[in-house]
Image (cartoon, rainbow over all chains, first blue to last red; front, side, top):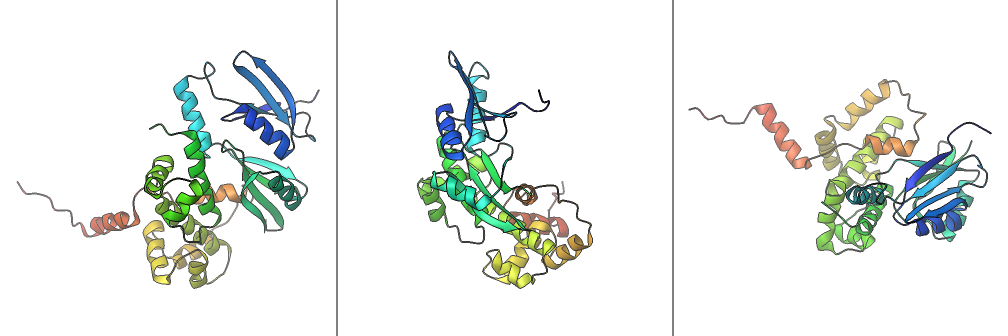
Length: 134
Length: 158
Protein backbone atom coordinates (compact mmCIF):
# COMPACT_ATOMS: atom_id res chain seq x y z
CA UNK A 1 0.00 0.00 0.00
CA UNK A 2 1.04 3.58 -0.47
CA UNK A 3 0.99 6.14 2.31
CA UNK A 4 -0.61 9.55 1.94
CA UNK A 5 -3.94 11.36 1.92
CA UNK A 6 -6.66 8.87 1.07
CA UNK A 7 -9.88 10.89 1.18
CA UNK A 8 -10.64 14.58 1.27
CA UNK A 9 -14.22 15.72 1.02
CA UNK A 10 -16.43 18.47 -0.33
CA UNK A 11 -19.77 19.56 1.00
CA UNK A 12 -22.46 19.44 -1.66
CA UNK A 13 -26.10 20.48 -1.54
CA UNK A 14 -27.34 17.30 -3.22
CA UNK A 15 -25.28 14.12 -3.51
CA UNK A 16 -27.14 12.75 -6.52
CA UNK A 17 -26.62 16.00 -8.42
CA UNK A 18 -22.94 16.08 -7.38
CA UNK A 19 -22.44 12.46 -8.42
CA UNK A 20 -23.85 13.15 -11.86
CA UNK A 21 -21.72 16.29 -12.18
CA UNK A 22 -18.39 14.77 -11.18
CA UNK A 23 -18.88 11.52 -13.10
CA UNK A 24 -20.69 12.58 -16.25
CA UNK A 25 -19.37 16.11 -16.70
CA UNK A 26 -15.94 16.18 -15.07
CA UNK A 27 -14.98 12.60 -15.91
CA UNK A 28 -14.31 11.10 -12.48
CA UNK A 29 -15.59 7.64 -11.56
CA UNK A 30 -17.41 6.36 -8.50
CA UNK A 31 -15.18 4.73 -5.91
CA UNK A 32 -17.66 4.05 -3.08
CA UNK A 33 -21.37 4.67 -2.83
CA UNK A 34 -22.71 3.21 0.40
CA UNK A 35 -26.05 4.11 1.93
CA UNK A 36 -26.65 3.62 5.63
CA UNK A 37 -30.15 4.84 6.34
CA UNK A 38 -30.16 8.57 5.52
CA UNK A 39 -26.39 8.70 5.48
CA UNK A 40 -24.58 8.20 2.21
CA UNK A 41 -20.82 7.70 2.03
CA UNK A 42 -20.03 8.76 -1.53
CA UNK A 43 -16.56 9.12 -3.00
CA UNK A 44 -15.34 9.61 -6.54
CA UNK A 45 -11.86 9.58 -8.00
CA UNK A 46 -9.86 10.71 -10.95
CA UNK A 47 -9.20 7.76 -13.30
CA UNK A 48 -5.42 8.41 -13.14
CA UNK A 49 -5.31 8.72 -9.35
CA UNK A 50 -6.41 5.44 -7.75
CA UNK A 51 -4.93 6.24 -4.34
CA UNK A 52 -7.05 9.34 -3.78
CA UNK A 53 -10.80 9.65 -3.26
CA UNK A 54 -12.80 12.86 -3.34
CA UNK A 55 -15.73 12.63 -0.93
CA UNK A 56 -19.04 14.23 -1.87
CA UNK A 57 -20.77 14.75 1.44
CA UNK A 58 -24.07 16.36 2.39
CA UNK A 59 -24.06 18.49 5.52
CA UNK A 60 -27.01 17.03 7.38
CA UNK A 61 -28.13 15.80 10.79
CA UNK A 62 -27.06 13.86 12.72
CA UNK A 63 -23.48 14.39 11.44
CA UNK A 64 -24.05 18.09 12.13
CA UNK A 65 -27.11 19.78 13.59
CA UNK A 66 -29.64 21.36 11.25
CA UNK A 67 -28.55 24.97 11.92
CA UNK A 68 -24.93 24.07 11.19
CA UNK A 69 -25.99 22.17 8.06
CA UNK A 70 -27.79 25.28 6.83
CA UNK A 71 -24.72 27.43 7.54
CA UNK A 72 -22.51 24.99 5.62
CA UNK A 73 -24.90 24.87 2.65
CA UNK A 74 -24.90 28.67 2.59
CA UNK A 75 -21.10 28.85 2.77
CA UNK A 76 -20.77 26.44 -0.15
CA UNK A 77 -23.36 28.34 -2.21
CA UNK A 78 -21.48 31.60 -1.58
CA UNK A 79 -18.28 30.07 -2.96
CA UNK A 80 -16.65 30.41 0.46
CA UNK A 81 -15.11 26.93 0.64
CA UNK A 82 -11.35 26.39 0.13
CA UNK A 83 -9.70 26.35 -3.30
CA UNK A 84 -9.61 23.17 -5.39
CA UNK A 85 -7.22 22.56 -8.26
CA UNK A 86 -7.63 20.01 -11.06
CA UNK A 87 -4.48 19.40 -13.09
CA UNK A 88 -4.79 18.45 -16.76
CA UNK A 89 -2.38 17.97 -19.68
CA UNK A 90 -4.29 20.32 -21.98
CA UNK A 91 -6.46 23.00 -20.38
CA UNK A 92 -8.14 24.14 -23.60
CA UNK A 93 -9.06 20.58 -24.59
CA UNK A 94 -10.43 19.90 -21.10
CA UNK A 95 -12.38 23.16 -21.24
CA UNK A 96 -13.89 22.23 -24.62
CA UNK A 97 -14.91 18.80 -23.41
CA UNK A 98 -16.29 19.94 -20.06
CA UNK A 99 -18.13 23.01 -21.28
CA UNK A 100 -19.74 20.90 -24.02
CA UNK A 101 -20.88 18.56 -21.23
CA UNK A 102 -22.52 21.53 -19.47
CA UNK A 103 -19.97 22.51 -16.81
CA UNK A 104 -20.38 26.12 -15.63
CA UNK A 105 -17.07 27.85 -16.33
CA UNK A 106 -16.44 31.08 -14.46
CA UNK A 107 -13.28 31.85 -16.42
CA UNK A 108 -12.41 30.70 -19.92
CA UNK A 109 -8.87 29.42 -20.56
CA UNK A 110 -6.32 32.22 -20.30
CA UNK A 111 -2.60 31.96 -20.90
CA UNK A 112 -0.54 33.54 -18.14
CA UNK A 113 3.21 33.26 -17.82
CA UNK A 114 3.38 30.35 -20.22
CA UNK A 115 0.62 28.22 -18.63
CA UNK A 116 -3.07 28.04 -19.41
CA UNK A 117 -5.73 28.04 -16.69
CA UNK A 118 -9.52 28.22 -16.42
CA UNK A 119 -12.08 28.11 -13.59
CA UNK A 120 -15.34 26.26 -13.05
CA UNK A 121 -17.84 25.60 -10.30
CA UNK A 122 -19.83 22.56 -9.34
CA UNK A 123 -23.62 22.95 -8.97
CA UNK A 124 -23.28 23.49 -5.21
CA UNK A 125 -20.80 26.36 -5.59
CA UNK A 126 -17.43 24.69 -4.96
CA UNK A 127 -14.85 26.46 -7.11
CA UNK A 128 -12.18 24.67 -9.11
CA UNK A 129 -9.16 25.95 -10.94
CA UNK A 130 -8.31 23.94 -14.03
CA UNK A 131 -4.57 24.19 -14.64
CA UNK A 132 -2.14 22.70 -17.08
CA UNK A 133 0.51 20.56 -15.45
CA UNK A 134 4.12 21.46 -16.20
CA UNK B 1 -29.65 35.78 8.64
CA UNK B 2 -30.71 32.62 6.86
CA UNK B 3 -30.65 32.70 3.08
CA UNK B 4 -31.70 30.07 0.58
CA UNK B 5 -28.64 28.25 -0.80
CA UNK B 6 -30.25 28.29 -4.28
CA UNK B 7 -30.48 32.09 -4.17
CA UNK B 8 -26.91 32.41 -2.86
CA UNK B 9 -25.67 30.17 -5.66
CA UNK B 10 -27.30 32.48 -8.22
CA UNK B 11 -25.89 35.59 -6.52
CA UNK B 12 -22.47 33.94 -6.64
CA UNK B 13 -22.86 33.79 -10.42
CA UNK B 14 -23.07 37.60 -10.53
CA UNK B 15 -19.98 37.86 -8.31
CA UNK B 16 -18.11 35.43 -10.56
CA UNK B 17 -19.01 37.50 -13.61
CA UNK B 18 -17.68 40.69 -11.98
CA UNK B 19 -14.49 38.85 -11.00
CA UNK B 20 -13.72 37.78 -14.53
CA UNK B 21 -14.68 41.07 -16.22
CA UNK B 22 -14.34 43.81 -13.61
CA UNK B 23 -13.35 46.31 -16.32
CA UNK B 24 -16.86 46.11 -17.77
CA UNK B 25 -19.82 48.17 -16.58
CA UNK B 26 -22.02 46.22 -14.13
CA UNK B 27 -25.24 48.12 -13.53
CA UNK B 28 -27.67 46.43 -11.13
CA UNK B 29 -29.93 45.60 -14.08
CA UNK B 30 -27.20 43.46 -15.65
CA UNK B 31 -26.20 41.76 -12.39
CA UNK B 32 -29.81 41.05 -11.45
CA UNK B 33 -30.30 39.39 -14.82
CA UNK B 34 -27.26 37.12 -14.29
CA UNK B 35 -28.68 36.07 -10.92
CA UNK B 36 -32.24 35.78 -12.12
CA UNK B 37 -33.63 38.04 -9.39
CA UNK B 38 -35.48 41.35 -9.53
CA UNK B 39 -33.46 44.56 -9.55
CA UNK B 40 -35.19 45.63 -6.35
CA UNK B 41 -33.96 42.55 -4.51
CA UNK B 42 -30.54 42.19 -6.05
CA UNK B 43 -28.45 44.82 -4.26
CA UNK B 44 -29.87 44.00 -0.85
CA UNK B 45 -29.49 40.24 -1.32
CA UNK B 46 -25.95 40.60 -2.64
CA UNK B 47 -24.91 42.74 0.32
CA UNK B 48 -26.52 40.30 2.75
CA UNK B 49 -24.72 37.38 1.10
CA UNK B 50 -21.26 38.84 0.62
CA UNK B 51 -21.07 41.59 3.20
CA UNK B 52 -20.59 44.39 0.69
CA UNK B 53 -22.83 46.10 -1.87
CA UNK B 54 -22.18 45.02 -5.48
CA UNK B 55 -20.78 48.36 -6.65
CA UNK B 56 -18.28 48.44 -3.79
CA UNK B 57 -17.27 44.87 -4.50
CA UNK B 58 -16.64 45.84 -8.12
CA UNK B 59 -14.57 48.83 -7.01
CA UNK B 60 -12.28 46.65 -4.90
CA UNK B 61 -11.88 44.20 -7.79
CA UNK B 62 -10.84 47.02 -10.09
CA UNK B 63 -8.37 48.38 -7.56
CA UNK B 64 -6.87 44.89 -7.14
CA UNK B 65 -6.49 44.58 -10.93
CA UNK B 66 -4.89 48.01 -11.15
CA UNK B 67 -2.56 47.24 -8.24
CA UNK B 68 -1.43 44.00 -9.90
CA UNK B 69 -0.75 45.79 -13.19
CA UNK B 70 1.16 48.55 -11.41
CA UNK B 71 3.25 45.99 -9.58
CA UNK B 72 3.89 43.54 -12.38
CA UNK B 73 4.05 45.62 -15.55
CA UNK B 74 5.37 48.94 -16.74
CA UNK B 75 2.12 49.89 -18.46
CA UNK B 76 1.40 53.63 -18.08
CA UNK B 77 -0.97 54.64 -15.26
CA UNK B 78 -3.37 56.25 -17.75
CA UNK B 79 -3.60 53.03 -19.72
CA UNK B 80 -4.10 50.97 -16.53
CA UNK B 81 -6.95 53.28 -15.50
CA UNK B 82 -8.81 52.67 -18.75
CA UNK B 83 -7.94 48.97 -18.89
CA UNK B 84 -9.40 48.38 -15.43
CA UNK B 85 -12.69 50.09 -16.19
CA UNK B 86 -12.42 53.73 -15.08
CA UNK B 87 -14.03 56.40 -17.19
CA UNK B 88 -11.53 59.07 -16.17
CA UNK B 89 -7.98 59.20 -14.89
CA UNK B 90 -9.05 61.68 -12.20
CA UNK B 91 -11.64 59.36 -10.70
CA UNK B 92 -9.21 56.46 -10.81
CA UNK B 93 -6.49 58.40 -9.00
CA UNK B 94 -8.86 59.73 -6.37
CA UNK B 95 -10.55 56.41 -5.58
CA UNK B 96 -7.22 54.59 -5.70
CA UNK B 97 -5.79 56.90 -3.07
CA UNK B 98 -8.95 56.75 -0.97
CA UNK B 99 -8.78 52.96 -0.85
CA UNK B 100 -5.06 52.24 -0.72
CA UNK B 101 -3.77 55.42 0.89
CA UNK B 102 -1.23 55.91 -1.90
CA UNK B 103 -1.23 57.27 -5.43
CA UNK B 104 -0.83 54.69 -8.24
CA UNK B 105 2.71 55.94 -8.88
CA UNK B 106 3.70 55.73 -5.20
CA UNK B 107 2.36 52.20 -4.94
CA UNK B 108 4.21 51.13 -8.08
CA UNK B 109 7.50 52.56 -6.85
CA UNK B 110 7.17 50.92 -3.45
CA UNK B 111 5.98 47.52 -4.71
CA UNK B 112 8.53 47.30 -7.50
CA UNK B 113 11.34 48.07 -5.08
CA UNK B 114 10.22 45.35 -2.65
CA UNK B 115 11.39 41.76 -3.21
CA UNK B 116 8.67 39.47 -4.60
CA UNK B 117 8.46 35.90 -3.45
CA UNK B 118 4.94 34.83 -4.25
CA UNK B 119 5.56 32.41 -7.09
CA UNK B 120 4.36 29.42 -5.06
CA UNK B 121 0.82 30.76 -4.58
CA UNK B 122 -1.50 30.25 -7.57
CA UNK B 123 -2.30 33.65 -9.02
CA UNK B 124 -6.05 33.47 -8.83
CA UNK B 125 -6.03 32.75 -5.10
CA UNK B 126 -3.48 35.48 -4.54
CA UNK B 127 -5.72 37.92 -6.38
CA UNK B 128 -8.66 37.11 -4.13
CA UNK B 129 -6.44 37.59 -1.09
CA UNK B 130 -5.14 40.93 -2.28
CA UNK B 131 -8.49 42.53 -3.00
CA UNK B 132 -8.75 45.62 -0.79
CA UNK B 133 -10.76 45.06 2.36
CA UNK B 134 -13.20 47.93 2.07
CA UNK B 135 -15.80 47.80 4.81
CA UNK B 136 -17.28 51.26 4.32
CA UNK B 137 -18.17 53.38 1.30
CA UNK B 138 -15.27 55.21 -0.32
CA UNK B 139 -16.98 58.55 0.31
CA UNK B 140 -17.38 57.67 3.99
CA UNK B 141 -13.73 56.62 4.25
CA UNK B 142 -12.69 59.91 2.65
CA UNK B 143 -14.92 61.90 5.01
CA UNK B 144 -13.60 60.14 8.11
CA UNK B 145 -9.98 60.57 7.10
CA UNK B 146 -10.49 64.24 6.33
CA UNK B 147 -12.14 64.60 9.75
CA UNK B 148 -9.25 62.83 11.47
CA UNK B 149 -6.62 64.96 9.74
CA UNK B 150 -8.14 68.31 10.50
CA UNK B 151 -9.39 67.30 13.91
CA UNK B 152 -12.73 68.80 13.02
CA UNK B 153 -14.65 66.76 15.60
CA UNK B 154 -16.19 69.29 17.98
CA UNK B 155 -16.08 68.50 21.66
CA UNK B 156 -18.65 70.06 23.86
CA UNK B 157 -17.38 72.23 26.64
CA UNK B 158 -19.39 71.70 29.79
